[in-house]
Length: 167
Image (cartoon, rainbow, N blue to C red; front, side, top):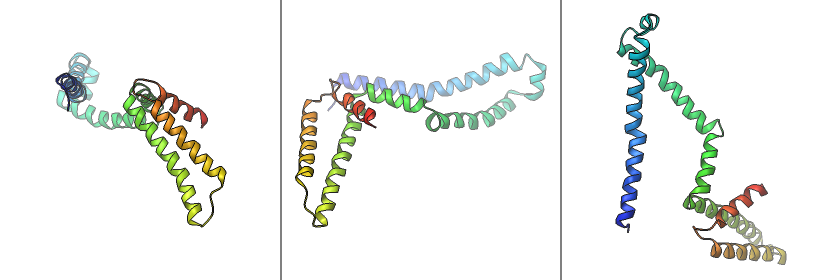
């Protein structure tokens, strides 16, 4: 259940997202088209020859601008380091995101280790005392880690940094 102050902050968040993602975006596009046409193009006869009316200007700019902006957006996510840097900041600054990444990392490590042991046992091979010690150590390390970490401390962030530098 959420408190009224939490609901207020949720409402504030939704307002900001709706405003920036939709309202401001649409107004900025309309403003840019209007200002560039009526302040720049109308004052230059050479440009008026290319864009004889505001409607033709909109059609040309949108037909060129949308594919260009799609390419720029695609590049932002897929071809540059910008998005991965944003995600690094998100993980560093958001304890819930960080916790999810750490939990998944722990689950994968434990699952891989246990799968290896299960495959060995499925082949009727005995686990060595070293393998049993490894899984006990891993389990104890994870128990200790999960009991010490809090959303308010930096244990999850330290865990991620250790894993990143180890690779």
